[in-house]
Image 1: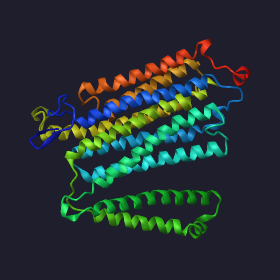
Image 2: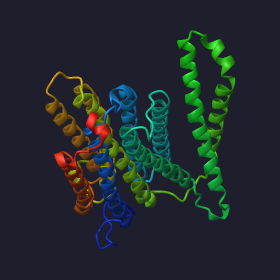
Image 3: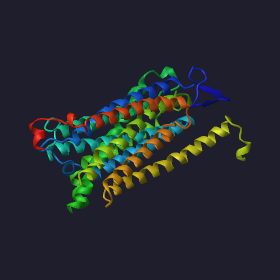
Image 4: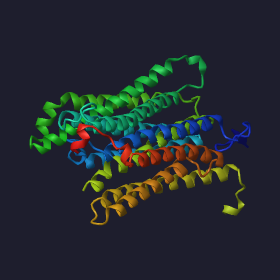
Length: 283
Length: 118
C-alpha cells in the first residue's frame, strides 16, 4: 500500500503490478469463482422447483416468511457494521473496529440461530428432510452451503477480533491469544445466555407468570448473564494499552469484509428466488 | 476550511472521505432495509405475476449492485476488481440462464412414475 505523508492509500498499491493490494485481488478472484458455485446451486434448486414430482411438498406450507425476512434484515445490518469496521480501521480507530466486529459477530450468530431454528422446525414439525424429497435436497444444500459460509465468516471475525488484542510489546509472550479467546467466549456466552433468558422473560409474561416466577425459575440465566457481563467488562478494561494492530492491518479487515459482504449478496439473491417467488409463481 | 483548500491525498482529504463514507454506509443500509420491506409487500399486491417477478428481480439487482459498489468499495477501487468480479458473475448468470433454458425443453423434462403423475 502506498503511504502519503504517513497515511495509507487503501485502494491502490504502487508496489504490485496491478496497482491493487494482492490480498484484495485474491479475494475478488475467489469471490468471482464462488459466484459460479452458488449459481449452480441456485440453478439446481430452480430446475427441480419448476418440475416438481407428484406429492412434492408445497413450500408455502413450510416456509415462515416472517422469520426469513427478519434474518434478511439482520444480515443486511451486519453488512453495515462490517463496512463501518473497515471504515474505522482505515482511520486507525481500533476501539471502534472492535465494537463493529463484535456487532457483526452478534448479527451473524443471530442469523445462524435463525437458520438452525428454521431447519429444526422444517425437519421435526414439517417433515421436510434432506432425503425425503427433491425440494428438501436442493433447499437444504443451497441454504446450508450459504449458512456454512456465514459460519466460516463468523469464525474469521472472531479470529480477527482476537488479533486486535496482540500487544505491541512482544516480550509479553502468546498469552494474549488465550486471553482474547476467553474474552470472546465470555461474549458468546453472554449472547446465548442473554437471548435465552430474554426469551424466558417473554414467555413468562405471555403465560402470566410474572417477574417473581421468572426470577425463581431463571436464577442461573439471570445470574450467569450478569456474571458474564462483569467478566466482559473486566476483559475490555484490562487489555494492553499499545497493540500491534492499526491502519496497516486495514487490508486484512477489508478482505474479511469483502467475504462477509459476499455472503450478504448471495442471500440478497436467495431470499427472493427461493423464498419470495414461491408466494408469487404458485399463488 | 473550505473544500477547495483541501489538497487531494492529504490527511484532511482522507478524513473527509472517511467521514463521508460513514454517512453513505448508514444511508445505504436504510435504503436496503426499505427495499427489503418493498419486496415483502410486492408479493401480496394484486398485480400480474410477470410484473411482480420483474419488480422482485429488479429490486434484488439494485440491492446487489449497491452492496458491491458501496459496501465492497468497488466504486473507489481500480476498475480491474470490477472486471474480475463481473467475469465470475456473468459466467454464473450465463450458467443459470442456460440450465433453466435447457430444462424448459420437452426433451429435458424429468421422466418416471413420480413425474408422470404430477
